[in-house]
Amino acid sequence: MAKKASVRDVRRTNRALLVRRLVLSGATSRSALGDDTGLSAATVTNVINELIDEAIVQEEGFLDSVGGRRRVVVAVNKAAAVVFGSDISEIDVTTEAFDLTLNRLARRTFAFPDRRITPERVIEVLHEQTSEILAELDIDRKIVLGLGLGVPGIVENPASASESVIHAPAIGWDSVRLRGLEDIVGFPVHVDNGAKTTTQAESWYGAARGSDHAIVVLIGASAGAGIVTNGRLYRGFSSSAGEWGHTKISLTGRQCICGSYGCVETFVGASAALHDWTQSEMTWAGRETEGITAMFAAIGAGDKEAERVMNTLVEHLGFALSNLINMYNPETIVVSGWFGDQLAEHYLDDIASASRRFSLEQPGSEAVLKRSKLGQNAVALGAATLPLDRFIEMGWPQ
Ligand SMILES: [Zn+2]
Image 1 (cartoon, rainbow, N blue to C red):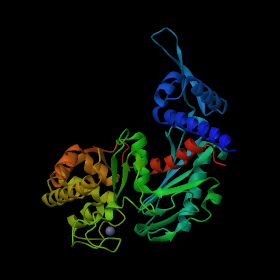
Image 2: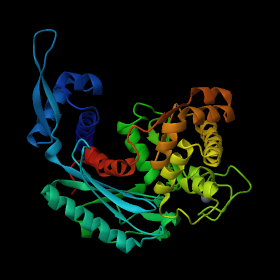
Image 3: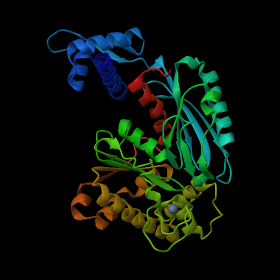
Image 4: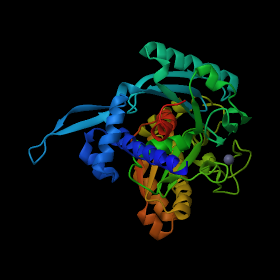
C-alpha cells in the first residue's frame, strides 16, 4: 500500500509542478516545460496529455525552432475554471472573479460605514456578489474552484472558512468564525490575512516575483506585512506573524486600534497622515481615500503643512522598514496597498534612503524597495490565489 500511495504522490507532485509553471509563466513548449521543471520528456508528455484530456490545458499553435522542427505550444485553458477573490477591507467588501490565469472577469463592491460590519452581513454580501457575478458571466458553478477571502486581521488556521478563526479589531471582529459560508455560496472558501494574500499575489505575479527573500508591506488606513523567507510565507506559531503595523517605534503617540501605543500604523497609516494634517480624528473617518487624494492635491498646490506631515511620515516609514530589514535581511521590499502605492509613486526614493539610513549598513544596502506592480487593489487578486493554489496542488475541489 505504501508504494502505491507514493506513486500517486509523485504523479500529483509532477502534475502540480507543470500546472503551476503553466499558470504562472504562460504558454510554452513541452520541451521547455521539461527544462524548467526538471521532469523527463516522457513524464511531461504523459501529464500534459492527461491535462489536455481534462481540458485544463490546450495546444495553441507552434513555436518555430532552429532545427526546423516546429514545437507545439501548450497553455492553460483559461476558460476551464473560475476563481473568486474577495477583499474585506476596513471600508468595503470587494469581490472579483478571475479565469484560470487570473485575468479579472468581473467585480462587485459593497461599502459599509463606520468600519463596522457583522460576520452575518459579510456572508450575505459574499453570497449576493458571487451569485450576481455568476449570473452576469453565465458560468456553471461546477467550474468554480472556490472563493478566497483576504481579511484585515489575524487568521488562525487559515484554511477552510469553517475552521478559520478571525481576529480583526479593525472591523470589530473578535474570534469570529464564518459559519455556514461555504454551504451558502456553494463552493469551498479559504481565508487569510489581507497582507498575506497580497504577498502571495506579489510573489506570483508582481514586484516580488522570483525573490525568495521578500517583504510586502500593505499600507492603507492601517498597515501590515507579509514576509517571504526561503521562498515561503513566514507564519509563526498561530499564523499571526507579519503584524508589522503593531510593532512599536515609539513610547508615546496616539492610541492604536489594538489598544496599545507607539504602533507603526499610528505613524504611517492613512488615518495617521490625515489626523496629523487636519488635527482631527473624525474629519475623514470612512473617507480616507478621499482625504489622501485631497492631501496630495494640497501638497501639489504648495500646502507646506501637508508637505511637512508627509515628509515626517516618510521618515517614520523608513524607520519602521529598517526594523524589518535588520530582522529579516530581505532582498526585495514591495510597498503596496492603496495608500502605500501612492506613497511609493511620490516618495519611493525618499523611503528607500530613510530605510537605509536607519538600517545596519550591510542588509540596508542590499534591500531593494519597489512599488507594487499590481496596483492599489491586490488583496482580492491575492485572495483568489488561495483556491487556485489548492487547485494546483490537489486538483478539482471535492
Ligand atoms: Zn497597534
